[in-house]
Amino acid sequence: MSRVNNLLAQLQKYKNTSLPKKVKIVEMGPRDGLQNEKTIVQSEDKVKFINLLSKCGFQAIETTSFVSKKWVPQMGDASEVYSKIDKFPNVSYPVLVPNIIGLDQALKVGVKEIAVFGAASEAFSQKNINCSIADSLKRFNDVVIKAQQNGIKIRGYVSCVMGCPYEGDIHPQKVAEVTQKLFEMGCYEVSLGDTIGVGTPEKTKNLMQALSQFDIKKLAVHFHDTYDRAIPNILVALEHGVEVVDSSVSGLGGCPYAGKPSGNVATETVVNSLNYLGIETGIDRENLKKASDFICGLLNRQNISINF
Image (cartoon, rainbow, N blue to C red; front, top):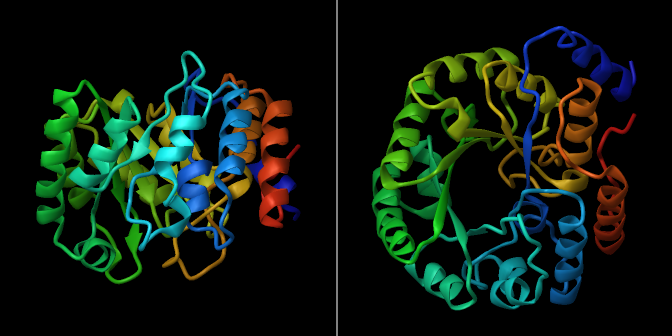
């Protein structure tokens, strides 16, 4: 069965299911997408890419990451890119901030929203940022306090909510604990990341049930399509009341630890799937294609989205 037919078969199961009427899509391409692409994109091209995305109808576009250029060369021009992009009204342009140094740089260019992240896996936290989950959250607490003092909105991420390349399956209760800490810090929303794409509909259902104590309207999902299960997982999350989905135009990016060269679920695939189910996204597909064609041309890569 072709990818299109397989997806349509999955979607058909949800035709008469109670799902949200509207879903907010957070576009991750410029940051989470490009960050793991080997080809370095020039600053002016990043600016053009983000401006193209701003015309698509997104309410939020994660723009860049204020990290060390030594460790993440692709994001070394964060200040320049953020300063030069057109800021569309009613569009949020969050940036990833790992520490106080990054926050200070972001504040200098007028950033209005930041994202901080924690992992649900101790081993992943140690490998990725060289400290325990508890220590990582302590670091971010200082960032969050200063951000709040400056009137900055804070979004939180939890990595490895379904599985870890070092620990294997992650217990949903561990995800709940990290999520609780992020909300206690002051995050207005927490995005649940299936970092290596090992999630399944059953795991997603279990996770949603484990997080039932939280306001579902303050949770988002961030699935990687490593094994072509992102859309089925998203549908389970929507069935449980989630109304915010992270995705990346043309499927840009992915986790370097995943073991397979498939990254974030493609925004086009998400939009097409939700449109098929009658769910409003507010995304203009024609403009989305222009943005996708532009960045795929620069990277000399194939668009892995499913279109129908």
